[in-house]
Image (cartoon, rainbow, N blue to C red):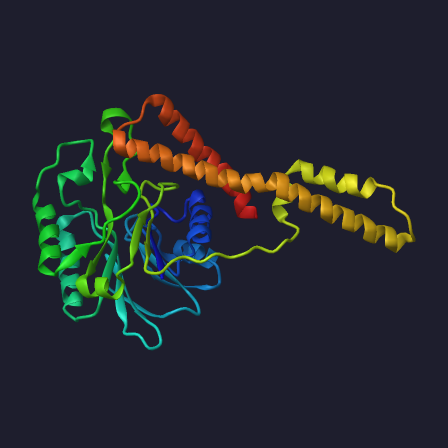
Length: 346
């Protein structure tokens, strides 16, 4: 199973839906947890209706423009029973034939440590039930100085001690990660730039026994100031695409030239034979053009994402990037959004 957890910082903004669909296309998660949607009421209903029909959903409305959680899971997969007992988490009981159920908690912890105490108490009661449990999301708290860079020096405040005590008291294990060290950046410039590891996955020891080959990946920050987290308990799978006339071709002027060129070629036969022959020529030319030219658009998207990840990795290792590299990173993010619009049409 693959679980995508992402603090998207607003699900109504234009970049959200295309970025989310791109993440789903690449990583094929069975469960998605979206935090800080900042939506409620009719606005939330409109966004939920835009998700694909093969997703089932459960929503926790935001309080004003703060918070909000959307849980999505694929129809026809494992059986998922969902509920929540406080506004900071969604609980999912996951079961499949001939296997014992386990619990996934999608957490968006409050920025107020006094309110977070309610979450720690609720999770403590949950873990006491004895089910294998994984807890994934934005905890809005770090544990130690190595989980922060920039800004004020790390101090061991009461909220951080309470977080450590909660993990220790319940025997929970941080699942670690691959990818960038920090999951959040305030996107400020120079000395004001701050990075922290606010997002993580933790689990009970019986969950670790159940899924010993788990993997947690920090994905590049795109369309949010938080990294998406990908938690995998099984290896991924691939899929094939069929050849079709693609709507995205119509947004590229060269496609019109190819069609005109194919239909201007002289062919022999009665009228229907000529139509059939021109259609066949058009198909072959479009197929070759798509393979040789349009395919570069999608490969370029992967290349831009790799370049973004490289910049953010160097920033992760070095601290603030030189101004020229920051300009390059902003350009890459703008290019990614432009190409993603074409990919969205596709």
